[in-house]
Image (cartoon, rainbow, N blue to C red; front, top):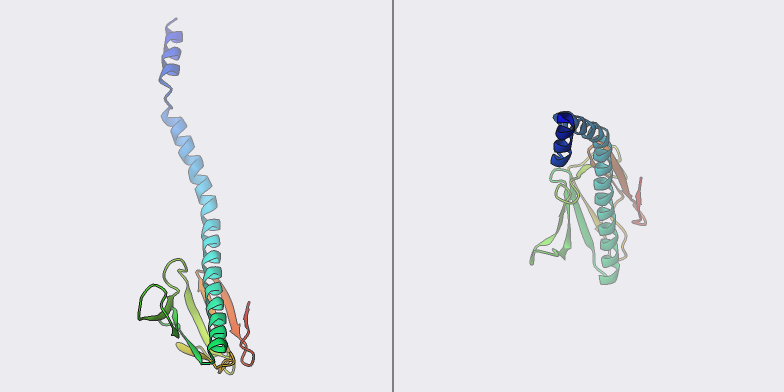
Length: 167
């Protein structure tokens, strides 16, 4: 009789024991340990993809503007500040300033790892400028690498046509 009352009391309380709580926390810890590396890798892939797509779109935009306005357009890349600027384009959110993209900030959290010309593809430069003439042709071919963590993408600008490719 006494045992039946205790069981009824426990069922009415609806609580969990410390053992049940410990097992639950342990299982959640194991799941988190398994998922964490995959999440980190996915995040690095995402950041590198977003940064490389932004660079590609801005290079293509500079080429289009050069052809449409019949004037040269300059993009300057820097591995020191992990950023680039387009001189003749105004900032979208800061009046009177140039268009400046910092790849180290959100949402990119990436870095410009390598800049080189097509003439010297193995020599990295701290800064490099591409000037598109009024026909949208670059003054030089460029190879750059952008990355986040262990993930990298290579972006090439063809020296004659100015076409952009990604590897």
